[in-house]
Length: 357
Ligand SMILES: *[C@@H]1O[C@H](CO)[C@@H](O)[C@H](O)[C@H]1NC(C)=O
Ligand SMILES: *[C@@H]1O[C@H](CO)[C@@H](O)[C@H](O)[C@H]1NC(C)=O
Ligand SMILES: *[C@@H]1O[C@H](CO)[C@@H](O)[C@H](O)[C@H]1NC(C)=O
Image (cartoon, rainbow, N blue to C red; front, top):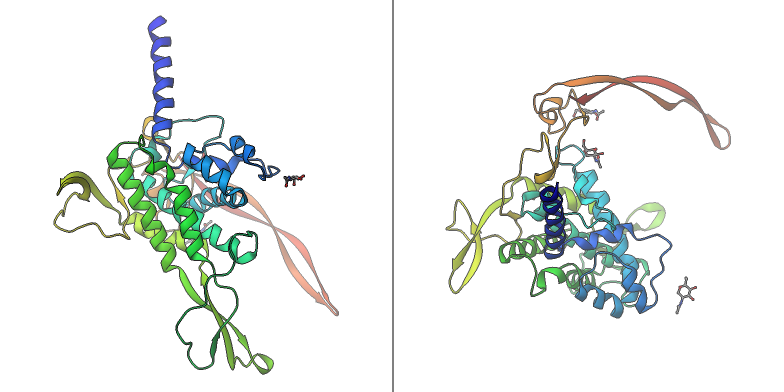
């Protein structure tokens, strides 16, 4: 009795210590900040969960930015779960309530999944700030600069470019802050998190593309107004998912005067800055294993006709699946009425779905 309660206390203490040491993405708990919270005074920074001291300092000196950063934390969660909805690991572990500083084994162990989440977080915070500059939500920044090159004939620069420069500057200051602390997690983990955050920002830089609007008589498009705009986060996340699938396993080795991360198998080549790296292999996520951060795939929906990762074969790890039926209500027999409205009927359709055993 006594020894078990002792062990329990020790476990809780260890979990607390670990959650404090490995706090690189604790700021994502900001996604739980109440929507009504209006941060316009420095003492409000104390109300925000998950910030390390240097982030709280950034909050006090950049109050206006905080609403945007809270929005970014929500975007990270939503985008991660959407991007991984068809995978065994579905990013559910990203969602930790702010009042439970629970140890997140799969996201703090230096795995491939952690690599993705750090890269996505770094890209998202800068993306959200850059877009907030453009949309006029922030007073401290506005449109990005007009490109120096002379546009091609028929094109001219105009519109409002996304302010990637400001987004990258403030985003990296905030999201890298925990890894820049002296007592941050082990050196190897810290290097891994910083590398993947930078890889996320590289993916964001590559997502700055030319966007144009047509002008001219009746849409003839004889003149185009163009600006540099960011692709949607969803596309950047898909790019990072591809990088996640081909991530490189690294080891922490002396290299010159310092220890560095080098590819484990082919250590003749240096790391590429745009690739994701991880230190520890992941479980297969087939069965529940809390220690490894795996919730398992029991009761997950699978797709009987898909050949991809959401196929019943792969999703259910060969355990088989149970069918169930679902009633869908859809709009149908729509009619156009002159002028100008549409009426529809409601039709019911029964579809068969499958969940893993
Ligand atoms: C802060 O925001 C609240 C809610 O919008 C507002 O009532 C208050 O006047 C603001 N305070 C300052 C100092 O701007
Ligand atoms: C992820 O999978 C778990 C386990 O099957 C499930 O409980 C959870 O709702 C899923 N999360 C999302 C965001 O789909
Ligand atoms: C299942 O996968 C097929 C093929 O990829 C796709 O066309 C279909 O929409 C999917 N069904 C569901 C319910 O997601």
